Figure: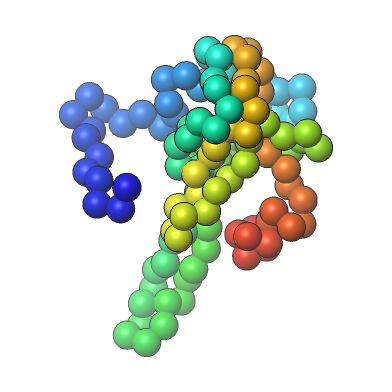
Length: 119
């Protein structure tokens, strides 16, 4: 992926075509499948590592930022997705087949959050 160019000629899409944001019975709003999604599908970028405020020696600000995918992920003790880290990008990957209308979830365990530096 690293050197891919994003084509915004048809406008920016915060979410893939097969995902929508709806009210969630878990908490607030969540991500829902608009169509069946197979297991092991790369849904897209959920988190990006941001580095700002370079003083010539160190970065003053380093943190994980959520994309629209990451911002609406709710916790489940039996999640159907995981966030796979690839250097500075967190990618939302389905771990199970997800039926249309089903909410996409991850786990918020302390072990999972440690991957994001306690995020």
